Image (cartoon, rainbow over all chains, first blue to last red; front, side, top):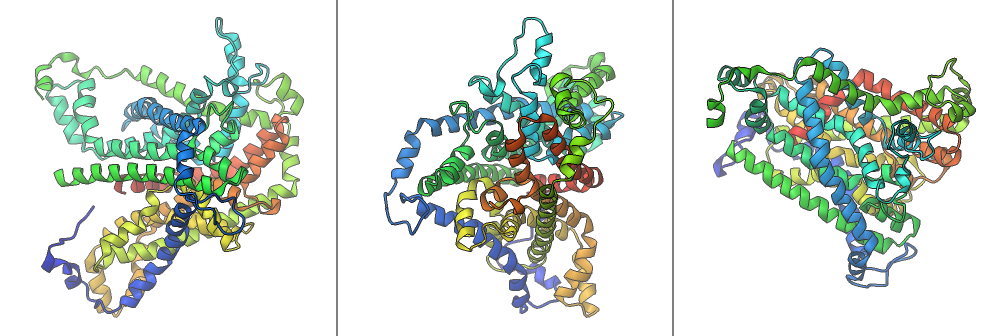
Length: 312
Length: 285
């Protein structure tokens, strides 16, 4: 990203070039105003209000008057189901980072720059990204159907000796791995695409020079390609973590957080309390906790990437 | 580095053989395509066939399911609502984001960094996380059960990423153009409208296709804001349809196929724009 000099006397250096006087402040204000209003009204203001309501016992009718301080938060952190939702969130993050992203990287390295049929494979892997989570969830409901006559997965398993059909989404132990497979199906293409773009930005000369030096393929990946991709990898890790916080439609449609809360995630928990039970004060507290988690990750990410810029 | 230097063996070019690469790619493609093929096959079978011979291609294909859904008025309502929301949101995003991005790319003023951080807040908060407070605000504005509410929220949450992408692109347009334009008597607005925007077509289409896909696929915002059946968008209606006809898998498959087709056609034509939007937003943000 291009940076303009910011030393004291030079703040306005760009304006020396700019033939327009800064006087037309009105234009600037008019240009910025629409976005400013949208963001204030639908992002900042709602969040502040939510922080306010999180301190009340409020069912959404009439004004919030029953001030209870941090009681909602205490209740939240004492609730086993919420803690289960946090654990499931961590499960999704850990598995995404340990399995999904490395697989995406492997695909990106295989597809690389010039394997024949590259465009076809790229298009196939990325296709699930444009299908909605609703479509994805219902497709996989059909595939995970426990009845071997109807569920495709169990039908296949039935043919293989020593394997037994499973209840997949109705099994408390299997439900999270089953959901993770669907998440991988939907999002692996996005990460692969980011890596492919990153690979394309590595100058070919570097790899050619390494080949002349007698570097073999695994060494090339470990010592040259991956380090050069570190910026891209950080971005995809960040997107993956922030994405894990957002998982909502998939889980809600496939399991409603069940069986017995085994696949509850924070967003389904928040949805249940806010829009099914209408405990809006408590729901606000959940939302605030989610916001703080998202904010923490974002700040860590920004810190890491900025340091990178100074080093470069 | 030393490790690299020492290993000057001749097997250094033992690339993974082509065959193995292709086997991996084909297995992975099969995993991706499998559910889609199941839906396409299922959509073209009768309910009975789906139960008894679910794994065989539908020969001859039965078009009854598709016809049935196309004859439902609610399907056309949903299609219209989704299209309306998508186009209005996209138009709003492109217009509003490019105005701000222009200022951030071309003008320096006090407090600019702070303001820019404010404008990119949306990158940190996915809409899922803020949906409850948003519902409260929209309810206060009396815009529940109104597509305008959906459009406003979707636009707001698409702005930050679009501003980042567009600002980066606008910055790459040479400052000299601006000088020439001003000599020719071009004011700031004219410069933006007649020079910056036409030059930025690739970035604008990337931003637009990103907004289109996100709006088209969004479930949560309409789910929370819309009750009335006539105002359902496709994702919302798809979810309800599955709840209602969940037992008739061939009909559900047909419904999925019909709602997926617009997205797939769009993908076919706009893959390049979509990809460049995603990577620009992710890598430069």
